Amino acid sequence: MKNFQIELPELLEQKKIAAILSTYDDLIENNTRRIKILEEMAQAIYREWFVNFRFPGHAGVRMVESELGLVPEGWEIVKVPDAVIINPRISLSKEGIKSFLSMGCLSENTMNVQTIEYREGNSGSKFQNGDTLFARITPCLENGKTVFIQFLPTDSDIAFGSTEFIVLRSRTLTPEFVYLLSRTDSFRDNAIKSMSGVTGRQRVQEECFKKYLIAHPDMSTLNAFDKIIKPIFNSVFTLSLKNANLRRTRDLLLPKLISGEIDVSGLDIEVPAA
Image (cartoon, rainbow, N blue to C red; front, side, top):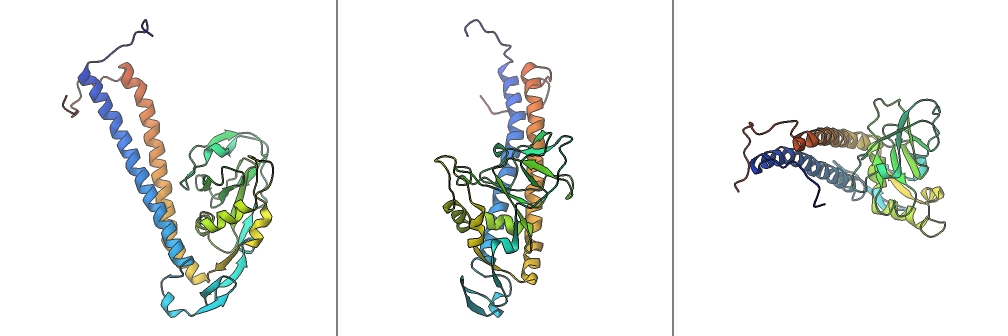
């Protein structure tokens, strides 16, 4: 290491380079905070409407006894597969390059896909925009790996991914409702309790969803919820695209700034005092 030489810019130039890169990092951090707030807002609205049953107009709706306790009158108690398609059958050609998601592409704390791979073939789970990918294997499920698919160019496009995903698709609800349902503690606990297999490689048994009951809202409530939630999901996706572009630009600039290919010495950039 003592014999390794580097070109070292003047201290002022180093600070200007750092200031440029820090601007990108600050924008990314700000967008990430906004994404977190929006997702927390969506989950809070879901809990308020469909767990606490305090939806708009709830005061005028009579509560009736059910298998889940008191629920709004007119809401039907159904098993998850009656409202959600589990692993929908989708045909996908083996030919050509398609979007592919490995388990590493999924986030543990956001609805956004972190990275997208591209592969040939069609072996694995298949999904489209509006589907929720739910990790079936331990410890990925316990760690929160669940995402909402909205990155495909059109709603008719099909992507594929790991066999360790359970694909959840709305049958009678809305796509956003299904995702938010999959993020609830009770839904996840039900899935985790069904796991079987060798230690460290246990998997969710799909039969567990037949044991999970939900209070299915009436259509007017679902439509009102969709009008509020869909724009939130769209905003989260837009911010994630902005962050991806910012990271890509920052990573392209970094080697050019460090090498001196882009000269910042003459730029009027405010830097911290020494």
